[in-house]
Length: 285
Image 1: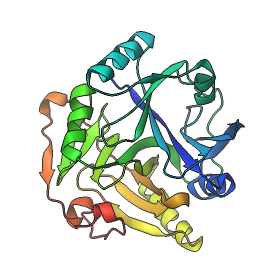
Image 2: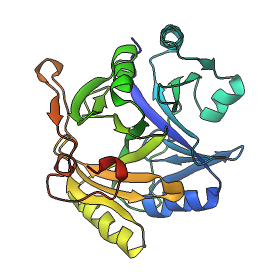
Image 3: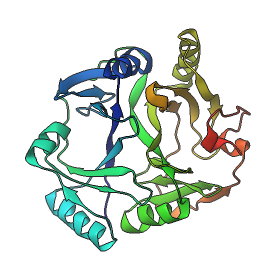
């Protein structure tokens, strides 16, 4: 079983890097961390970067996860090959471009590109937000899934993810104490469905709501509270149709033995206990 230690980054293709980076800094509140070979790096915490925009198709998405060391990376590559996943080891130049010591890349069953990395860079400088959104860090991704039960099996049997809760067939998966780092949503495509950043408080969520409305940014869901994770949330639309989320107060599951996943129906009230209605197709019943 592959032990995923942390979620590290998302890489997104874009045909207009200027628009994407302006949104990420001036609207989301990320810090510009540099550019290399056309790739633009953005920070949200003490990691070197958590979001990268690369020239290319807006449908080109990669999510990076950290494993312990090179031995664990080699073992993971073997595990993936035994599971029928084609694995490619990153070249020295690609490792430098990703700012990691080593990595392998593969496609999970629906087809989204996944990197497993070792020794990802950290920054020696404090994260300095371009806009004070109250961000404390990059926390999780939603992934499209053409077969959630099949993909759940991959993440929980080939990898070490555990189900925290289900909404319909959609599992919310943890790899540490945080309620979920990966959420799978039924769709007829692959890729990243949304990108989550944690913020300090409900006040930050509400300030963001009014700020985004003033800026003419489409609110896609919220403000609201998830009955699964307990987090207060706000989803909004970014460049290339990507959905971004702020949330705060996410539930921690620190006693594995005492946790039993709950089954929620696939209904709007399973996504928000306050009554907010989503303008996100994957959340609509």
